[in-house]
Length: 625
Image 1 (spheres, rainbow, N blue to C red):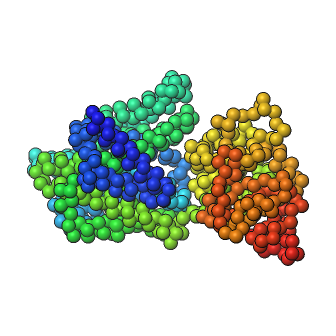
Image 2 (cartoon, rainbow, N blue to C red; image 1 turned 180 degrees about the vertical axis):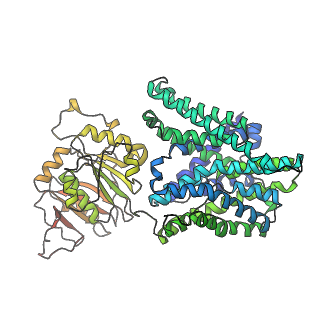
Image 3 (cartoon, rainbow, N blue to C red; image 1 turned 135 degrees about the vertical axis):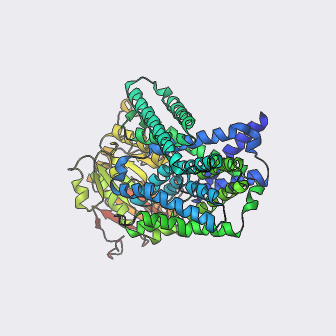
């Protein structure tokens, strides 16, 4: 019992630790998790999942993969397919057949596998894996359409690849029992089983969509009920046919995502946390389960196979599938390169290696080591090159962190102009077309719509914006916006103007539901609007080793307010009473100052008022920012 508890604790520490290091360094999290599991398992022997969990290991991994696919399905909205639907449909049909055929041919002619093993492994290679693709897309700012294509393909093709492997296995099992058996005796029953599993998943989604909005399930039981139903659907569908449960839970997730069940929005943060925990744990367990004997099968032919998989099989699959489509060539080439494999490939390969061995194919164990080699190779190759390839093919979004401003007021318009001049991507959002007129006159990027409307998530690409400022005239609405986006952007990256200086404490909102205050003094909406009307200005100052933050503060007049700093990387940090940033050389400080302040003595400063530049103290015209 104690050894099992220690194993579980180590799995959690290694998995979440790898995720944290990936966040700090920008390295692919999956690579770090595979490395951590391999070091803890076969290298040092700290973790032995088979000894710790025994017969429970396989069902634990299966249920974990099912929950991950369900969570991925919940992120798929059919409205995303307006621009990428044709490509997704082609990759899910033509791409599966072409990829299966090319993968099997590479396995036979290059890796030297016997045909049955090559055909089965070629079917499994159809998968790309949301457990790998989604973290890569999260870390890399890729444009909407190629990101949508990769996301949909990874989630839809995971159960498809499993079914391809089932079809191949069932055919060879049938042939071993009845040598004259044909595909027509195997494929139709499996297709029927897959359809039945899909119907079970859809029926479960309809049941949840009917129960939750009607209050039939209390709020505190919604998440347990939902995940229990998912596990039940997975197990029942697998009773119909092996791996059909993956189809059922994927269909259930996609169906629920498109039924507009508003009560599901409250569980999104929790299910995302569960997905992170499951991905971290399963990758550690699988890589720790690898044995050195599994690697003995690998030789130079398998090295050539991996190269063929990267540079022939995947590119040809995508380019053939998308022939004649409306997807631009640069996006086709990007999708053709990005195809990392993940949990499903390793889990299914290990399962069918055992089954093929039972059928008399003695070298089927090669699938275990080879599946890990495929996962490591594709994750390293694609994880470390996705940014470079996206830049070369011009499918990368804004490279600098962006600022999303909710509310179009004179003060937010002035702030947006200042940020745009500093090369920071900015977007002003307001539900009033009339209030946005000032932003349109200034040529600022703006979006007309309700930011809290679910449709906004699909009409407005929020990926480039890592910081949100809610600055409408309604303080309670600002707090609501910050609460809504806190789980997606981060609690420390959503800001709002404070309460008015002369406000009544009896009507103040608690800090627990508010975003972080923009100014350390807590200036409110009417406060900044009043100062804006009086002619207050935004001033920028670039710090250096000779001119530090204290020097910059001394140059400011009384009543000036320091708003934020911009790192050389473009990262935005606001000065708040809760967690003020530590300025350093190279940072640019943005202050809000009274109108009588001239430009500072050092040439790095500038003052703006309503988009017009003032003259510096020496009487020279300043250069544009």
